[in-house]
Length: 373
Length: 119
Image (cartoon, each protein chain N blue to C red):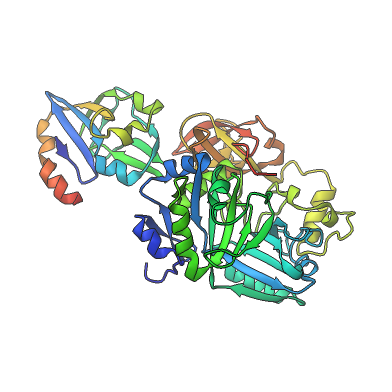
């Protein structure tokens, strides 16, 4: 793994016995000795610590960063209050999703943006080209950790006073580990926090958390099954440049102000495609992201082709993420089907190793999320 | 007990061979969430893919180590696949094969040789 980048916690992962794998150009822990299943269940029962330092942290510096970034995303950022965070996505000229990201409104109207590791170079170039009035400052001297689970608050509160924060609040705290930038968010469907910490203090901070009884290290394997149970998309699997937000069932993440008739409607790449879909009745043949519950015990993983009937000749869709859901106790998948087949309860068939296996379209998330509102 | 390079174990009793995967194999696979077994009565040839195991990570095929007829399968694994993680070389056997020629097992490793392989 010679050409791979490492995070500031690399030595700690090794020490903890992590199995390291290449992911988005980084050598990352896929699991620790506890194993994917137990790491998943521990996160749901107590608190899991994730290294997500491979993700891109970027500060958009200008008083008008919100209005500026609205050129590139269909979200309302002008409407984002101080110290609040929001889910967003970059769109391209045909309305496809270039990446999904988190945007927080920090001091002086600056925006703190977290983007996916695999897309970060492209995202940074895209922001530098598209934001005329803001400095795009890439933060390379900070690690990013996520502490997720019902006991995350209890654990982190021993270091900094986070109990008053609500879901999607952000705050900064001085601490024994330097200044910590905290958001009450994550990608597991659990209450929890993402914490940006100086790279040279990250290991000491992680060790302090791991020393607590509630906290275990959790790798990318469980991160994937946790986010899938929570119905959250993985960019590159469930979202890509050929998939628009209507197809991805993410219209909830486009605020009224940016929808047709809103005060700052449109004005982002691919607006013509997305606005037309938002304004008109759905095309029954257009794709929709759905939850899929296989009826048997065999997981339907990404790439499984979906059919309308057991003996249908032509496929109607495809699974984009699939796994066994440790908390729900059965296999779970997400995928794309024609809108006419996207109703909850619709029976479909997936081709698993040459056999047609029955499944049903189901509501997302598979497990209700437990965010602290 | 005999062992294959594919991390299967074979245990001979008369003309019946019981087949499972080794403890080392289950450790490498991780948490097992699904096991698909062949049907009783199936005639198998060496290298046929007879069992599918899915772990939290991926699907793996288990190849038949010998020629013969499936006479029994461990149905309890379809409802409790995690048994393979708990007791791979004991209760979590996969299937039993009736064989004509017991010399088929001669090609496989002893326990000591297998331990050397995975060391």
